[in-house]
Image (cartoon, rainbow, N blue to C red):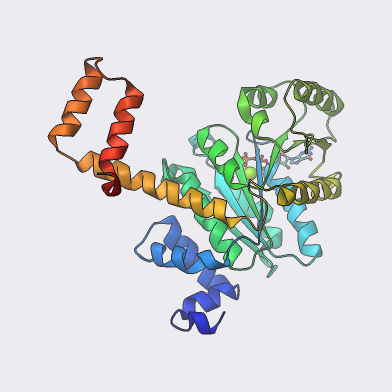
Amino acid sequence: MKAKNDDKPWLVRLLNGERTVLAKAISALENETDEASTIISGIYPYIGKALVVGFTGSPGVGKSTLVNSYIAGLCEEGLRVGVIAVDPSSPLSGGAILGDRIRMAAHEHLENVFIRSLASRCHVGGLSRATARIVDVMDAAGMDVVVIETVGAGQSEVEIAEIAHTKVVVCSPGLGDDIQAIKAGILEIADILVVNKCDLPLAAHTVRQLKSMLSLRDESPEWSTPVVSTSALEGTGVVELTEIIKNHEKMSSNKKEGYGKGKPQQRVLRLLANSAADEIKKALLQDKSEEISTICDAVLKGEMIFSDAIQRLIKGSLPCKQ
Ligand SMILES: Nc1nc2c(ncn2[C@@H]2O[C@H](COP(=O)(O)OP(=O)(O)OP(=O)(O)O)[C@@H](O)[C@H]2O)c(=O)[nH]1
Ligand SMILES: [Mg+2]
């Protein structure tokens, strides 16, 4: 490995897990600097080893506290863990960045944990891409597990969930917004449902409610979504959750398709597809040709259906198809 990268001393240091190099690489990817593309090309031969776990759920359900307990257990097993905390963009939750840092600070001194916060407001439209790249660079730097924490509120969270091998949807007891948010679609992405704060009243009721909602869902033959009760504050249920995450990972690794560990092809395809989409969009927006305005006019007049227009634009923007 070393000989191959003699011309890239930064890559050798990154692959050895040097924190300063990893931090710099993440910043370059996050800000899409000129170095970003060199970093991506450099790390791709080395990805596909980390297990990627997503924790999502409404604000305040205890995701950070739960992630904290989860990674403490992983560190005790001697594993290296990367954490990406995607902060809510709402100004109402502006304190979350600091809150997350403080709660996770207990691990900061541990050489085996690397935590990075990403502010979603800085990544309009590109949050999932930034997150995917940071996952990859943490993976290349030798993290055994990469945890992504997001607030389950919109499309970007669903996209981020696609990056994770195992999606943990967290809610807390009660009939409030959490259940509503879950009903609104987050349930669909859950591999594991957690009712956190099970030290509070109504937890058992919420578990029953979720189980009955799950019974209406089409389950895959390989995996029946479990509902786990935890109290991140008291540390109960976290060992069980860790075991279930491991089992889910084992199950998805055995599948021929999907995001099981060791299937980096899917991740490269996603990266290429996203980048290709960006390129096509850029080319189309800069294209002042007659053909483009003819297509737009035809759509405006109702003479061409949307899907046909898209097909023509895609074909026209790919040089190989011209
Ligand atoms: N009673 C109880 N409180 C908890 C538990 N887990 C977390 N909390 C509390 O719930 C509050 C929110 O916890 P966080 O971990 O910040 O929740 P979060 O989901 O990460 O919040 P955001 O990142 O802002 O969306 C804090 O005051 C925690 O101490 C639990 O298991 N039981
Ligand atoms: Mg949090």
